[in-house]
Image (cartoon, rainbow, N blue to C red; front, side):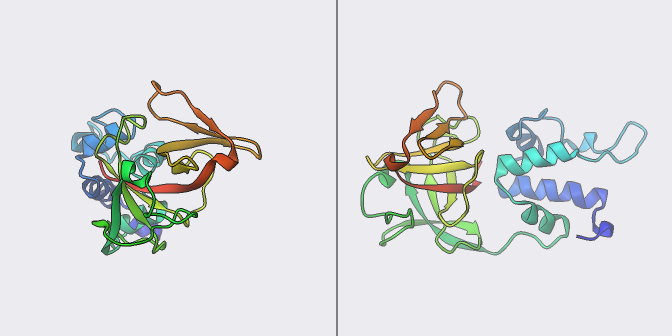
Length: 213
């Protein structure tokens, strides 16, 4: 992205576009990112003297984390290129995902009969969507929200992930820590205690790359 494209109107327009992609208002996006709900209001985009006010890099980082958008996606919006063309990805509920017949042992979707949801194209052609049930990841992911998972994406500490255990349990968590002997999974909802599993108790783990709001 050239410096000439990083204008004040383009940057705020990209934030507005990102909010709309996730079914949010500007204030809703700010709230989802853990910011003051008025932080992105139009009245806050200029100072009392009429000078442009720019969002901080910390605010932008929180927005990308809250929406699951990549920096490349955001840059595309700033440059006015818009989002990638949507495509249909398989959709299944978390409870259904615990049963057999939907995934192989590596966490890739198999078979047919899936519902579909429209989602901007991603490099992983095996990406799929899950409908959240429960409140362990509230307030970021609420009951009924849709998350898109990429089984091919690398998973690192701090990533939001979907995990399927050998016992058939499927859960959305945060990868807090992983060693040769244990995997610690945290919930965003503080009412839920972290889960600690042995590596051989996990069938597969896949990174969440997008979520509806």
